Length: 143
Image (cartoon, rainbow, N blue to C red; front, side, top):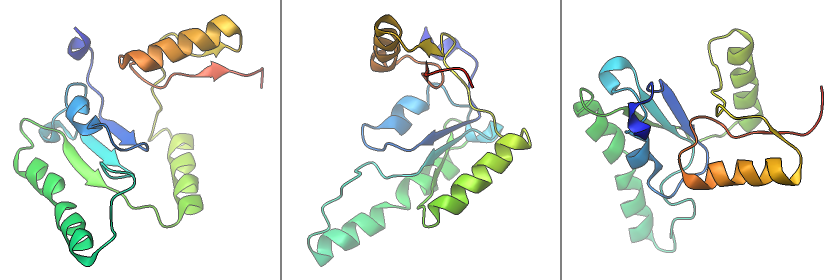
């Protein structure tokens, strides 16, 4: 039932781990329709790089998913890795895109939740369900 909603153009994963790309394919447009999964972190946010062989193995795995999804874009969303170097500069560019209305942030329909015990509990329940359709937010006060 969750996959029948309108599909997203982009998902930006800032958490990593947990096979979010695998779950994201259900709610993202295909690569043919410019759907993209943007990973700011890898599948393993703390990879084991304790030896040269593990570093090489990890490095060789990085291009696999972007290459695979570029070959299968009729069926799957594109996959892009972004390795943030200039975090402050990146944030400035994202804020500029939001101001220019070139990037919109989808809020979960019941958001923002009130900053009460019930509101915060409701927000955590929706987030924990794995079925939030957008960002789950709690309103801290009037701005």
